[in-house]
Length: 170
Image 1 (spheres, helix red, strand yellow):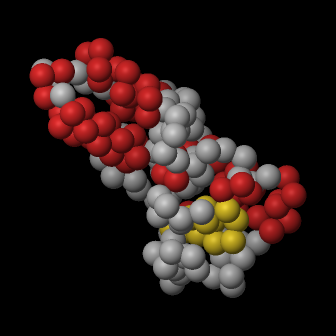
Image 2 (tube, one colour):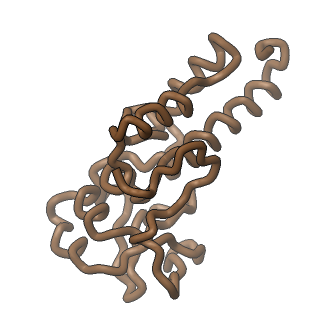
Image 3 (cartoon, helix red, strand yellow):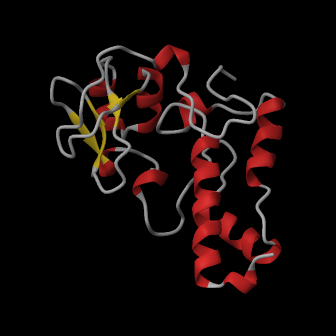
């Protein structure tokens, strides 16, 4: 386990190794990218893109409706079809992954919240992290801890469910 998984994290924290100065903007959506390690990129891309993924300096595009997943400041882009996994931040149809190490999806959070009014997924992930069982830096397309994304997804689901059916939640 690397330092990218911080216990009790409420926001995504980048791995120290991936922090780079001079972040660039996505050539498609114009939003700033987040640095991602080459080892993460190599795990994520389809085999035909391994040579391109070997080039250091790629960034992850966090914009939900942008088809670009990774981009390089020199103009190279890798899009959703170029990666091997569904990128949770960019998906709207189930299964929407929220945790790549332990296989949690947004639908699992919805199901648990409907059944109990709360969600234990963040606590369960935290326990696995404490046990040294995560590998976010290579399994998560962002190359960093998923707890921020998981917590955000749980909050979003709770808000939506409260609006749709306030009596369903305690």
